[in-house]
Image 1 (cartoon, rainbow, N blue to C red):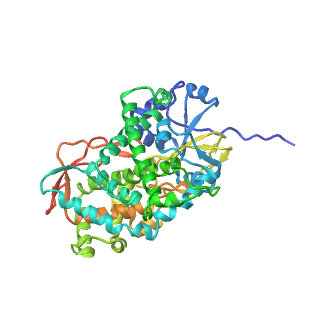
Image 2: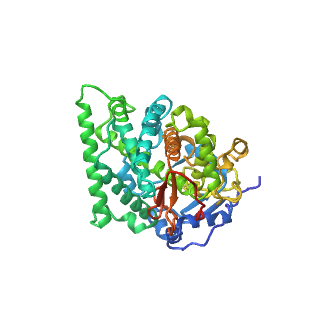
Image 3: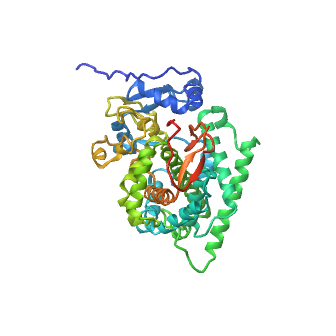
Length: 471
């Protein structure tokens, strides 16, 4: 019998430092680097460098960037049990703990089954009036002709909504602490993913950023534990996530500990408003530049709503607005990258590549969504990409703003309803225009944010010509 061996897979990729791998280039221009990786094929190998090989005790340690939707489906769905989450940045672990965002296996499945009903069906639509009313109140407060920081406005709006969802009460002065802590945490997390030195520096080292994050987290945790204690001693339970968690049990049938409840609340508090706020901010950015799109949206809103505040039942009729929302999420997905996966065993991908055991697999919605093979002229804003006809022909898993498979975003249904209701409510009352002279670029921290505060002027009538080009 002849011995036949499979030749090792041959991968191409951009040149990287033998010692430091691709991290210097990734830190300099993360989004541009990922787009450049498209030119090297369906699977791009990025050796992680000798320093990380030594630390990980893993020979030929490398990240493999997936650029083909069939491979993405294979890793996230078909063979998802072969791929576990890679270790996360220490700051990320400190913030989210063992919440549903980070757990694996049976524990993760149990958490999803526990929490999923609250973010779907009647629980979601029950908050439609709250969402629309808060958006209406905010837009009513804006004075005609004044300038606003639209990112900040959207963040406080979505924070006030998730606060009611989690705790059944209005957010107060704590909003500023939460927003500042998120901003510091996002930048520290990105820094730790980009820099080995930063990832090895403990939080107790008294840098300015570490002190600010620690102070903010301690204030937030103190507040959460106070809410938990108050609710445990209350004679009645509210219909909110905190009450759900207090009534829940773990896999052994025991009540959740305060720390477990803290981790879930922190996960939903931070992830549950930041992503939607960013998605809305980018949508206003795009609408301010394309007169024909904005005019068509105005016509649809007038036809469906007739000047009234929207309800959940109106959303399915606002088809063009949904197309705008989807195209905005394509161009600026808040979750611009998914958590890196580690391959348990060697695996053959549909594209023909063979991933070795221990491969670090990287999937980026940003890169998939801006690949000309799946979306011709990918940088162009075109809501028609999401018409009913286009949806039927689009390649599956080329569009994954909420991820896919067993780790698909738990709050997707709520986030979509929230985003669409806020869009419909505010766009019915005002038009928003970018203040002249700004340079707006996407900044990939933990979510995809504008690199500077996005200043927009409020106008209650009329449409002006666009002045900006999509970044």
